[in-house]
Amino acid sequence: MDARAPNGDLIGNNLLRALRTEDWAILQPMMEEWSAPTGTLLHDPGDTVRYAYFPCGSSLISYLVVLGDGRAIETALVGREGAIGGIVSQGRLPAYARAEVQLGGSFWRIDLHKLEAAKSRSLTLRYLFARYADCLMAQVFQSVACNAAHSIEQRTAKWLLAAIERTGALDVALTQEQLAAMLAVGRSYLSRVIQDFKAKGVIQTKRGRIGINNLEGLRALACECNTCVSRHFDDVLKGVYPAEENGVVCKEDAVAPHRGQ
Image (cartoon, rainbow, N blue to C red; front, side, top):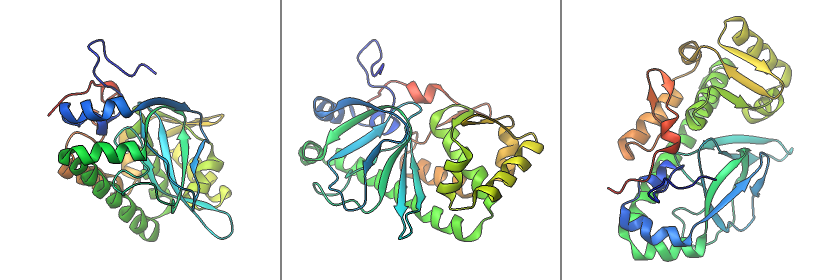
């Protein structure tokens, strides 16, 4: 991946971009560039978590809770605003949820032993990752409330908004079967929702992709949950959550260079 600007600065992941210059100097020699296709399993429940992963650009990772009947329900979607895997915990621990690459692409990753060594050298590095963990927990809390209180139509629109904010593109590589499974709804029910969205002129579909025709129209169909999460990110880690410009997701946010604080 084109991981650096001409001056050598990091690009691609907003959480890493928020690091102080001296903290990135500690972390960078321990990091490795890594890529994975859609569907790559990072860990299953009970597996020892060995790496922390930082999605770059349009890459996405889903946290999924695996139920007794084998269904995997998404609880959090992580893109260039964050990371997964032992960011705060001390060392390697067994995973509670499944982590799977939702949209393949480029990542930074770091062995958790090395990450712990880096955090032991810098209080500000530990503090930044602890603040991010608070934001990720807020996303999970909001997801629980959303699943209990909001309609499938609202949740579908919310998921699409979250995905395009994180990828910077008005087009999501996703089948209706995949989306139905993550939302824990029947394929036929979701198909009716998608057809309704298309009839309203909000989205279009083609093989394996959902495109957004009307971003404001999609927002009008969604619940407030995605806005609540982004607001909390802005309160706790200003500038990390993907930005927008003139009503369109800002692609520059996916490739802006590292800046020390």
